Length: 170
Image: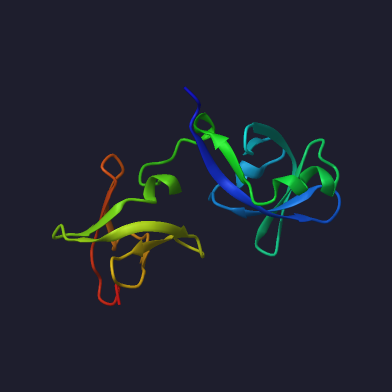
């Protein structure tokens, strides 16, 4: 059976002419992009392993340079594709920390068990993540991942229980 792969970034463009690519990060582990780390790109038929030669941050994006890809023409074809890692490459997380892919898609309930919606996206604007709650027939709500709000995360059953604070869903 094929290994499970997880997206850690999307190549949004090339950068300069020396083979750097501009990546929109989908991981909160910057060490994913350390020199010497292997990431994978999946095109139509193949999964291509790439070794990161260098990483820097520029205007909010991660700029990566891969070993042996030294020219814009070598990386042009990867525009729009996702960088991935194997499941085994995931780091062990401390308790109360979760991978984005574990949270996205979870159903969200208040403490009375009433369903509020589903997590569709995670934003990482600063000190704490913000979970985007997709609500049927209403506009999205933003739930800060902080202890007073998020009371229980049940990854097994894809359920999250939150305490509704005043103004949270307005």
